[in-house]
Structure formats: structure tokens, C-alpha cells
Length: 404
Image 1 (cartoon, rainbow, N blue to C red):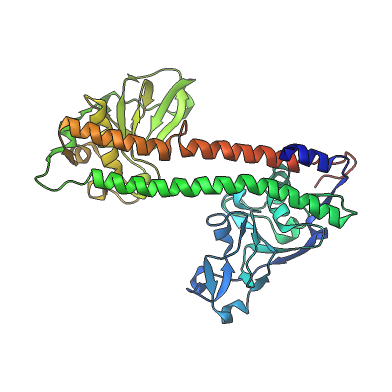
Image 2 (cartoon, helix red, strand yellow):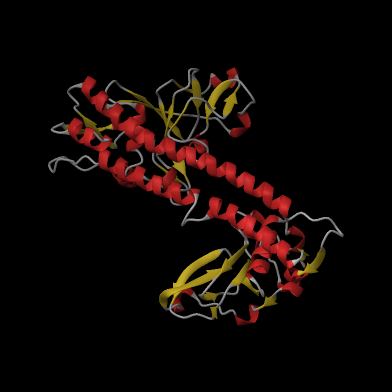
């Protein structure tokens, strides 16, 4: 019997009641805990910001600690408790839940609420419910603030949670445990794939740096301006209000920013960011290839090469080196045409370039491709998880029941 068929049988004829969180356990608002209080060891501590940057839905260990003296001033988190974020600049991060499963008592601070579940609800079950659309819509009604968004512990307590078999706590927990078990299967697989992807990225970066490291005298070096034809003069920026919608990608400094009906290029090219904070932050590649019909604005340099290997070799190299010496401006970083052309590029023999590019292309596919490789597999698993999560946790509300 499949997991889904099993759950359908388990939930067949089961009464579901929506109860406000306050009826399902105690909610305790945290206090204090600036990051300056963290120590290398001591009492386990959970900072609210870490819940949406470092943890999944549950954890047995913490990444931070505080001294016993500091811990006495903070709210206590026991095994099975859920720490919920109350504040963030990103709405999606408000209301994120982390189940603490550690053996030692932990602590948390301000901008977090501790939910101590009663015998009617499993902490991990609530954590999964907190990811559903129903929970998101409910917290949206209570969200306050524009730049910094907050849902208070008092308002969080008003959000309704679906509870199967509320009059039979033993059966209710059994159903919740099965739902959690099924969803854990999907999330654990995604976690394993993500871990594997991160390891492969490190491996890719290592081999990329090895393949693209050349000593003086080992190969010839050329300025980028001598290796590529610069097509910047053909760029045409279009104000957002004047763009005619279409299927042609409209590129800016960091990639596609829109789709338009016309094009100015129809060939294989390399774009290099001309300005923007990403020139220094390097959160996304500053050099990226484009093909076919495209439109490019004046925030990305346009370079044309004679061969695929030459273009990709320069792309890999530019994304691997520190370009700070070529960038002007701090508040508004800029890589102007003169500095771009002056970047020194190793220029091995054509057959060596082809060998290096072929190797790096394979690694790049494994670590970056959305059509194949691990990123594609992770995307499919995530969609599968979301499908089953919504299927298992989308309990209808009675029409007579008041909305949250």
C-alpha cells in the first residue's frame, strides 16, 4: 500500500477541528539575546534570525551558545518545544517554526515566541502546518509594519490549526505522527541532495581554481580587450514603462530583468556586469553567456568571441578571480569599459582551452543546471514535497466557522 493510500484510509471519516494556537499549548515571548552574547560553548541558544538562515524544521543541536549567567535572563526552550519567529524584513520568514529536539535545555531571545505544545498536538506537525498556504494567509492578516514585519505572540496565538480527532488525543497524535513521517521522508531526501550539491560546488570551485591557475611564463597572458570584440555601442536601454511585452529576454547587470517583443542581438555572447552591488558581493556570476535573440541594456558589457571555448574560458575565469582592482566607486560600484578591457586573461593554446572548458562544463552542469543535474533533482523533490504537504494538511474549514 502506498503512503498516500495509507493516509487516505487513515483520514477516512476523521473529524477535523480548527483550533487557535492558544488552545493547543502555551506561547511564551522571548526577550534579549543580542548576537554579542554568543560564546563558543555553554548553554544552547537559538537566535530568531538563525531560524530562517541556518536551520530546517527541527534540530537536535544549536549553532550558538551563551554563558550560564546570560541563560538565566532568557526564556527556556525544552525538548519538543517550537521556536517561532515573530519579526523579519521578509514576510515569508515571519512565523517560521523550529522544533528543538536537543537533550539539553536551550534558550531563545527577542523576536521569537516559544510554543510549548499540549498533548493534543505534535511540535513537528505544527511546524509543517506553518508552511501551508492557510497558515500564511492567516499570519498575513495579523502582520504589522512595512520595512520590518512583525506578528506578535498575542496574534500568533489566534491563528487556527487543523487538528484531526480532537476528542481522541491518542488517535489524533497517531495521525499527526504518520503525516510527519511521510513529509519527513521527502524533506530528508531534499536535505541529502542539497548537502551533496554543496559538496560538489566546493569540489567544482577547487578544480576550477586548479585548472585556471597559471604561473607567469607558463602561458601567454592577454588583456581582455585583445581577446573579445566589444559590442557595448549596440546596447539600448528601455524604460520599464516603454517596453513592449514579448518572449525575448531583456538582460541587465545580473541576468534577465524582463521579456520584450524585439531584439538587438541574435548570436552567442558573453555579458559582464558593468555596475551594481553584485560586482563586490558576487552573490551571482558577474559573467554569463547568452544565446539567440536577446536585448541588453546598458548595465552589462557585451563581448563577442570567435569560438565557444574562448567565450566559456573567459566566463569561467572572470567568475573565479577577484575583480576589485578593476572596480571603481564604493556606493555605486562600476566596472567601466577601459578597466574591463585591461583585465589580464591567461591565454593557453586552443586545444588546452577546449580541454579545460569541457571539464568545467561537466561540473557546471552538475552544480548549476536547472534542466539536469542535482539542482533539477532538488527542484523536483521540493515540488513533490509541497504537493504531498498540501494534500495531507489541506483540511477544509466548516462554512459556519468564523474566519481567522
